[in-house]
Image 1: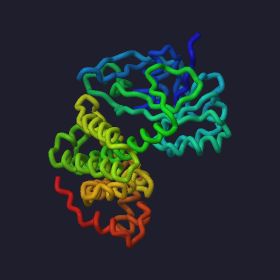
Image 2 (image 1 turned 30 degrees about the vertical axis):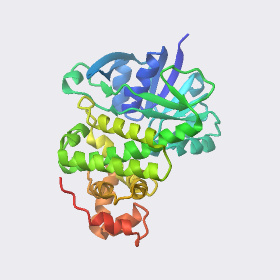
Image 3 (image 1 turned 180 degrees about the horizontal axis):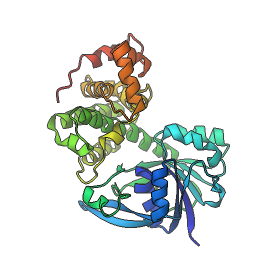
Image 4 (image 1 turned 90 degrees about the horizontal axis):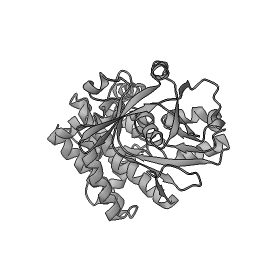
Length: 356
């Protein structure tokens, strides 16, 4: 009898990475989402294609779907062997009533603190943190989309997960709590921060995909500079050992330049208020980069670019634009970034020039 998995979030991570990983290990796949158009398509087709990048080409595989639920539906969550949450930090807590009944819940959200919070509000002790060490795209090249407009593209990545008793696919990398935290720190600062910087700078050049940003020599230099500032800061602050940190850094730079990923700038840049908040990737990274023994000018340029990001479909970018126009840059650093008005980092950032 097949094991059953319920994946909350049929987006890039859920559809592009998690579902293919478990499908090839003989799990029956079901999704939960809030997008009715997507739900109707998935329920009508009962299948889609996932494109895994292997040896510089796409390895397309068909993923069969049992059912896709709307998040408002009554779902027998207890009937599933495993539940995975990849709906975004802002949405995962809204699902706590459904998560209460999960036998095992893996939070693949972009914040390790979601586990503590979900355990508290669901009163479910079987909540674990998973890190999808992968870049997935919520789209695909046009020639592939012609075959199936639900196709998504992903690297051949790995799910890093805290050890627990449940039997799971062998492709999962099980680690101790200590090592899981090490992976998370690298994901947040060495991956997420420069990835976001590449997106915001690419937006300013009116580019569409991350690999296009990395083809721009000036943007590439800033992204490479920022990741070096952050990595050296983590090493000098003795947060991560040098060997692991530098391996992670080289891996990320290669990823960002992957022309086959078609990773949309709009996906990486969205929710800029969260990404500019005091304890998230951009502000925390520049504070860490101060330990790199040089002024983190590349991180500062990335923050300035984030403040200039605007997408009519992104509510947070609209809020930043309003605050910038009506109250000024220093107010935004205080209000959004949580910095004291006398923090020298504010003036340091504002003195930078974005020359791309």
